[in-house]
Amino acid sequence: MDRRSLLKFGGLAAVGIAAQACAPRAAAKPVATAPVRPPARPPVRLPHVNAAWDRVIRTTIGLRPHRPSGFVLKTARLDNKTIVHNFGHGGSGMSLSWGTASMATDLAMAHTERTAAVMGSGVAGLTSARELQRHGFAVTIYAATVPPDTTSNMSLAGWTPTSGLVDFKLRTAEWDEQFRTAVRIAYRRLQLLTGPKYGITWITNYAPTDNAEAARGGNVLMPDDISNPRILLQPGEHPFPTKYAIERPEMRIEPSIYLDALMNDFLLWGGKVVIRKFETPRDVTTLTENVIINCTGLGSKALFNDPELMPLKGQLTILAPQSEILYSTSGGAHAPVTPEAGFIHMMPRGDGIVLGGTSIRDDWSLTINEDERKRVVDTHIELFNAMRSPART
Ligand SMILES: Cc1cc2nc3c(=O)[nH]c(=O)nc-3n(C[C@H](O)[C@H](O)[C@H](O)COP(=O)(O)OP(=O)(O)OC[C@H]3O[C@@H](n4cnc5c(N)ncnc54)[C@H](O)[C@@H]3O)c2cc1C
Image (cartoon, rainbow, N blue to C red; front, side, top):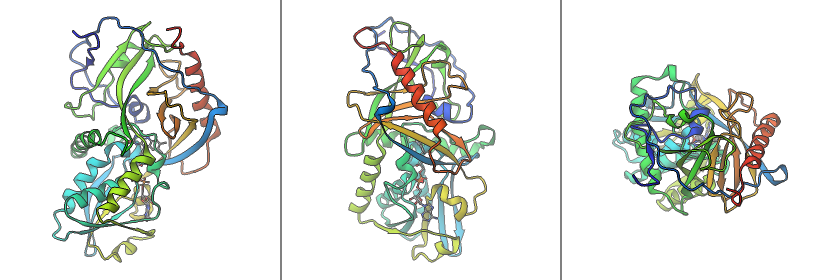
C-alpha cells in the first residue's frame, strides 16, 4: 500500500468535524471494517498561526436559519402565484445551496412560464437565480439586502453539509431523501467551481484528538457514495499537543469572493436586482412574476409565519491574514473537547484567519458575545502556542 494511502472508512461521509460539533449529536455510522493503518510517515510540518489578541481585526455575527425538522423545499400556492420555498439551511447553506437551488428549479419548471422572481440574495437566492437562468428563465432578484450584507457573508465557510441543519429526532424519510439528493448535487457543483474566480479551494484540515476512535466519525445523514478520506496521524506524525490528529481534505469557500462572483454571473446573464423588503405575503402577490422562489432565510419566519425557524447565533473573530497558513483546524489543544472548552474551528482565508465555533440556539441578538469571543480566541491561542514548531518537529 502506498505510504500516503488514505484511510477509507467504508461508505462514511465527507462531513466536517465542525459539522458534527455544531449539529445535534449524530449517531455514528457503524463501520464494518477496521481502518487500515498506513505505515509511519514523516511528521507533518505546519507553519504557526500567529494567534494573539493584538492580531484581531474584526468580529462578525450571523444568524444561521435553523429549522429543527430541516430545510423547506416545496411548492405552495399564494393566490395565482406559484411559490417554491427554499429556506432554512442552518449552518449548511454555503455547502448545500447548489443542491436545493437545482431541486427548487426542477419544481419551478413544472410551471409553463419562464419569467421568475427570486426573493433573497444570500447564497440560496443567488444559486437559485443562477439555476433558473441556466434553465431558460428571465430572473429578477428581490431582496432587502444584498452581499456583503447577508448572513451568507458572515459564514466561516467550509464544506459542512450537516451542520446545524436538522434535529435528528425530527427527520423523515422524505426529508432525508431530499437532503441526500441536495448534498450529491452540491458537492459535485462546488468541486467544479474551485479556483480564484469563485474563491473555492481545497485545503487540509487537522482535528487534534486523544481518541483514535474519533477518526471513524461519520454522519448517518450522508449518502454512502460520498467519500470521506481521513488519516489518523499517530504520535510523532503531527505537531499538535494531543496524542493523535485526524487529517482530511476540506473544501474552503471565501464568502465575499464567492457571493460577488455569483452576483456577477447573475448580472452577466441578464438578471435584475431590486432592493425591496416584503412585509407580508400580500406584498409578495404584488410581484408581476407568477413563479417565485423564496430564499429569504430567517426572514421566512415572519414573512411566511414559519413557527419552526430560529437562529443559531454564530460569531467569528478574524485575525490578520497569514498567506502561509494553508490548513484549517477543528478542535482545540484539549481533546476530546470538554463541555467547558467547547468546539472551535480555524479557517484561513484571504480576508483573515477566521476563528469560529459559536452556535447559540434561538439567540436573535446581533451584539458581540464577549464570553464567547474570549473562549474562541483564547482556546485557539492555547492550541497554536502548544503546537510544536516546524523547526522542532
Ligand atoms: C458564523 C457562521 C458560520 C457558518 N459556517 C458555515 C459553514 O462553514 N458552511 C456552511 O455551509 N454554512 C455555514 N454557515 C451557514 C450559512 O451561512 C447559511 O446557511 C446561509 O448563509 C443561509 O443562506 P440564505 O441565502 O438562506 O440566507 P441569507 O444569507 O440570510 O439571505 C437571505 C436573503 O433574504 C433577504 N430577505 C430576508 N427577509 C426578507 C424580506 N422580508 N424581504 C425581502 N428580502 C428578505 C435578505 O435580505 C437576504 O438577501 C455559517 C453561518 C454563520 C453565521
